[in-house]
Length: 412
Image (tube, rainbow, N blue to C red; front, side):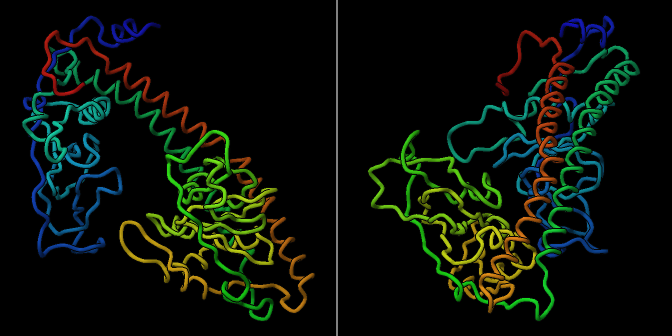
């Protein structure tokens, strides 16, 4: 079925009227945060979310005891993540110029949400001053109302569009929940296997069993298609898992004598990140040759099983200890002098050969479980991506109504 036929069938011969958002919604902008009635966590008293600009959970600023908006509404980020639209079905308190759209007319708010998602990346923002979306800028955006002469049929058409798109979003949510469950299961068994009773192991500080070697800086301008293998700190937590034997990036060969390297068997740790999981994230380098590392990372050189160390550095216990030695702020930094004092378990410490054999046994079990977990879940991210593309395709198809000849140039 062609796009035009699909829409014609849905509309059943009726037309679509385009109205400015200002006629469809009451548009308000968030103001200052409540100065006294505010909490960082939800409590019995402070149960109203304070919402700012941001994507999903990052829009949550805190909690208060009274709402400014009590009706189901849409919010549109006016700064930062400009245009990001969210559906709000519980009372909230908007701040920092967050735009709030509350219906004036009898429309299906979920239908409005799906339409606003189709245009959220297309707002034309003035280049001068602080980039932001304002009430005057958004109120002229054209909004489609199907079957305007028949309110009952209009709502039925909107509801059918919502039903179809909800089906796609629910399927994606189910797949995402399954992927999350698989990861939690894997993390649980890994932590259990790396939990030792007193007397089974000796706990030693990292600084006692090895040394930390800081990398040297290289920049994006140094990247080439064929040169020296390098590992950027950001790649450690965005690309690499527990171990790696091949680098994904290379820099100019003339930097060879300037850079510092991780040797095969070293554990490379990112020294900066936005979250506690990112900063200090470890990857065992098992390549045949050395790999150059960025100056915001460290190579930990030791005589243990590298994957054993890397696996242990992903555990909740190690992360909790590591967090004590991380600077605060948006970009967190590993305080290496403190981290060097974090202790790790050494099995059979008085018998190096037996110790390495036990480390290898633990690694073999974790490798098998890791392979099993990822063989089950590796298809899930791909499936989630496909469902997301399918959802976006049908969303744009269902909401691709014939547009009026003249529209205000607010969205590209």
